[in-house]
Amino acid sequence: MNPLENRRFLLQRRPHGTPQRDDFHLETGAVPAAPQGGMVVRNHFISLDPAQRGWMDDAPSYMPPIALGDAVRATTVGTVHESRNPDFAVGDWVLGLNAIEDYSVVTPGGFTSKIDVSIVDSPSRYLSAVGAVGLTAYFGLTDAASPRAGETLLVTGAAGAVGSMVGQIGKILGLRVIGIAGGAEKCRRLVQDYGFDMAIDYKDAHGAKPVDALSAEIAAAAPQGVDIMFENVGGDVMDAVLMNLALHARVVLCGLISEYNAPEKIGIRNLWQVIVKQATIKGFLIAGYVPRFAEGGAAVAQWIGEGRLRVDEDIQHGLENAYDAFMRLFTGANTGKLVLAVE
Ligand code: NDP
Image: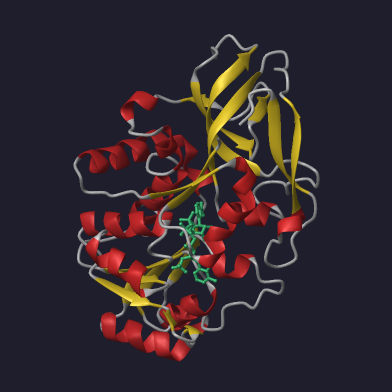
């Protein structure tokens, strides 16, 4: 990066379906000045998340849509570049909800907090292991799913950032863990790197498998049914798992990434199985757990320290590569928590 310039990755058109390169524009301008009571943060690591795709749509959500012409909203880790706030000094490491840009203006009362980078091997860990990803996995499983040792947990999007942690936490809690992911290599990693009991590939040489074929594989892997379904994907994969619920199953709806780029929402067709199995579906949002973040962070940090939890990051380099990096989430190219290192 040029220390005299601020590059900003702007949303210039709302994507219709899969985001296109020219839905965005990389603008170069001057480094901003800190407002009274606020500061300017130089971003070093930027979180790339499926949620950002939702924020690009003009639709009701838990956050307002990104305004056209604004930089794409993102959680970032950076250092204070200029401060007009007595609680933050130049050079402090901070975590905050900012944007895909070199420098972010932080106004008073924002979400920015100081972080201790001496306790992690890389500051990017605040976007993965001890950040929202780790907390989502922790609370999504331990709280929202009410797990009991010996039960069968099935995780979709299992080789991704959230999914791989959910499965490993499931093993720590004494569950039998099945993961669904795309491709032989990801399935190998589920078992060998993350300790899942079984992995199912939802793809074959022709692309995504039909619902019936995938459902049959799940039935063979979970003959007693799935007690906890941790859903990150939606669509056909979810329909296949729904056909294999155990009585009184709990479904944690964490994400529906297969539907984020669908211009028309198709919907789930096997929802009737929720009635048949007297199951419970719970919508999960990590933002609802803010008061308990310290508890979740401590548990996750302890398991990592004990070598029981492995957290992989997929670090992509260069703000100018934001579009290509972001799209890795939707092609499945990312191998762990997707992070953009600003250089
Ligand atoms: P991941 O690291 O899991 O990356 C996304 C993965 O999704 C890809 O690698 C790909 O894996 C899979 N995928 C992409 N498109 C499809 C598709 N069409 N069908 C099936 N799988 C697909 O991302 P995260 O861990 O950051 O997020 C995982 C999920 O968790 C998302 O749905 C996200 O929205 C949700 N989430 C929810 C939160 C909450 O508070 N509710 C908080 C954080 C995340 P593969 O190669 O296996 O297809």
